Image 1 (tube, rainbow, N blue to C red):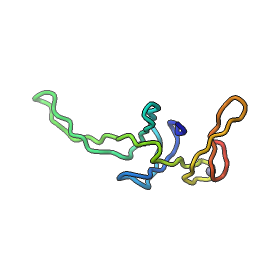
Image 2: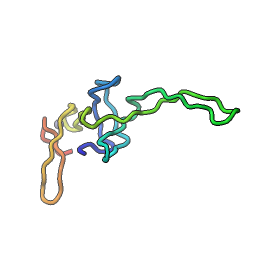
Image 3: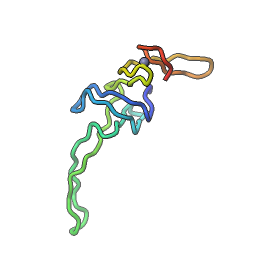
Image 4: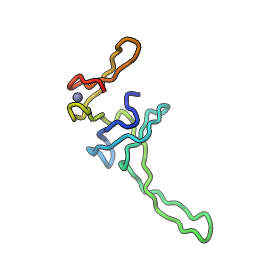
Length: 101
Ligand SMILES: [Zn+2]
């Protein structure tokens, strides 16, 4: 998984295609992520008791990581991210400006 929580990404598919936002949750096991305030879908919540009202809430739907691009903090472009190893650790870098993210 090359995308981490806190990254700014641009969505490439779905109803918010072309919009960008901050990653608030990453599901490493499924390779999906949630972007703050984007890819929201209406969900009907049924009343649990008689006094409660059922309501419609916006629920963020996870997006496949392959359907987003990271916005490079250095060149501010939506870029593909490469990986390189420097010493012991792996680093992510922007393929457009080569900056380490
Ligand atoms: Zn860059």
